[in-house]
Image 1: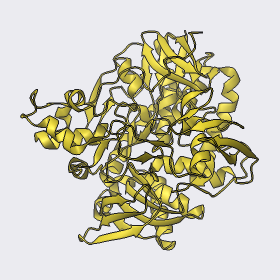
Image 2: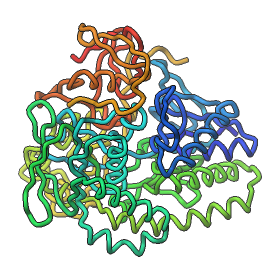
Image 3: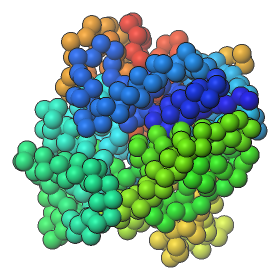
Length: 456
Length: 90
């Protein structure tokens, strides 16, 4: 049985660990040069920073995942620097160092991770505006801050974490604006206490920022990011309706995470609208099995659940693949994983309630603001597509809106604009967000050169 | 905007060219870091809405494309700088 594991973050690494322990030699693929994923992103070679400096409270986990990665490299068919740009029955289409290739598989475990979920803000395409995840990668992987004086705008645990990491690194943090009011978070506290350690870490972050004297606005909204050729300031409105104009030269922007689920889509896995995450997620059971034979999912790419859950889900999906291939399964270990995984959804639901995606803010993106940064499509163009007066009739769902306007048709394939575009369209149509559907994936999942060298 | 080095700045300096002009960055930099540590943008939008400097840093948004002699169009955030690279922004 040939098993392919796509992705080398916490989920992929634990999946490969289980497969190797069970006597398999899986092909293990990641676009990066080393394992760890985004959460445990590796620093530059020869860094003088310790794991503690780099990963804070998660240092032990990062160290364990990295050490495991080193060990599993030789025990697996490790393919770093490799993009899987398409998945067909039994075959992966790949690109590595400019060369096309194919990899056959009997079973595949897709551990494709997540990226930031965005709300378009006037001026958000200006140089100096980066995702929160990007701002964190800059510091962790490259030792750089995205600017000299940084404003962090959005919501979710990552907002507070990245701001704290910037303060710790000696960067000036001009503002932390969380669109979620304190009261919303407080109401979710009981649910968050299902994971007291994580809850305590969250409170410590907020305390640290306040102690550092960082300006914090909760329950506010971004009005605009301003500057001629680059970020010069942000205008925000606080909960009382007062507007603040704050000088800065960079902005970290992000409103929770969304799954990178393009390969699951291309594999034919059905998607379901998850009201808790307010997003479409590929359908799977708790073991990671999908309706497509041979395809399992694990980690944030299967629906946002965090790094701890990803480690559990990766291991569990590997056991599912082994079992489905007729191999022997460690029942005690599987039962332990199942028990641990069962504890995740209630905590995640509380976290989503504590930091909801500001759907109304997204739906009311100002007309002139670019929604699709690849194709420079504005909110007004999208709204015009929704109107029944449109020359071909109104677009009733996002794929028709894409055909009308090119929203989501650009190089990123709607990864960035997909969620806000759906909010704008649903609002314009006066329908439920689930009714406008989701942008269908197309190969290649990322741009590939037409002139790439012949198939190996 | 300019990236600010906060850690691991004691690395070997390596030369490259940006739009034909001599530039310098550090071993281990991605093209995105190398360029934005010395210049204020990576590309210009094809649609006339101004300059861009990348967005996601993780190979997803495709908004940091630059040209490298011999390699063609590459994502700046996932391409390692090599000594002597000739990088163009248009």
